[in-house]
Image 1 (cartoon, one colour):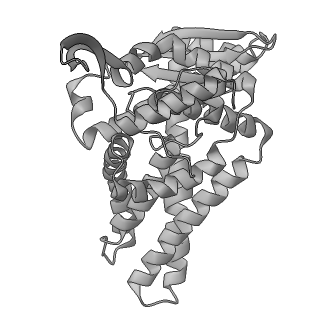
Image 2 (cartoon, rainbow, N blue to C red):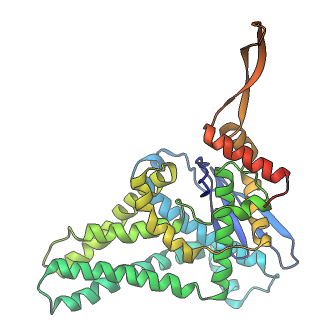
Image 3 (cartoon, helix red, strand yellow):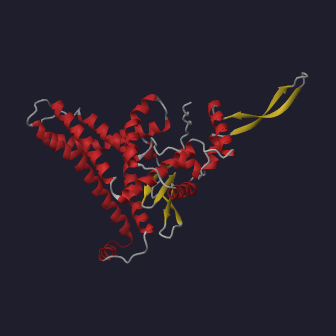
Length: 358
């Protein structure tokens, strides 16, 4: 019999793989767990520099643009932090001392901001401007504007796939993708109602619909669709429209990702499929040491036992039962907060665990 997929419950937590570690974020807090050079796990707690519950971050479509910028900034900051923590203490370079002298205590913020801007410019040039100019060259020999736009869209997808596949060949990125898989596995373990331990995390899926990879796929695909509506003879205007559409594309992509993470409808499953396929590249199966790091980050910032008690366990209520002799007896019975099918799966899993079956 085919194994039935366990129903998942949205937890609200998210994460990111970092160098030799995992970051897990819950509301305004996030924890970074790093496997140190001596083999120990170092867990540090942090608070976001912004209020995730602010009004502007709740406005549909606008919140997607802000979330995109926030995630880039936080991601760069955490990657820098993890690189420092994972390695032995090193003497600052001449460049480090110069930046410290110029910017003082704001050095880290300035470097992070510069890196984010540079990353955005690189992404725009590689995934938008380059395909546009290549398609424009093809347009000199093709009279059909729709065909030119189709070529541009195909080139965007091809460039993105080549880029993701190419960096996956790097040794450090391979390990990063393994930690990425560990992060997803922990979240899936919790959201499917399993106890957060090494065995259950290992058996959980490394794919998740709320992944940043899926967000990037949405951005690429939605950008292709919207560009089909740009009809102008001016090359400058075509470039300007594409740049102006970036916030719109990010906003729509975020809303789709948000819906996909909270809904199991067939339509959203189809829309999410390309992102899940891409995660076969951007996530890899982690080893046990990596899973332990991801569990440490998760437990530092999220009370998974309270979450599961709220969403997956049962509660006792008083019920009256008729005995064979006709008398009525009051008993304690459980009313289940999840479906019968899920309870059957839970009991079967408990039986297997008690018997030591894999």
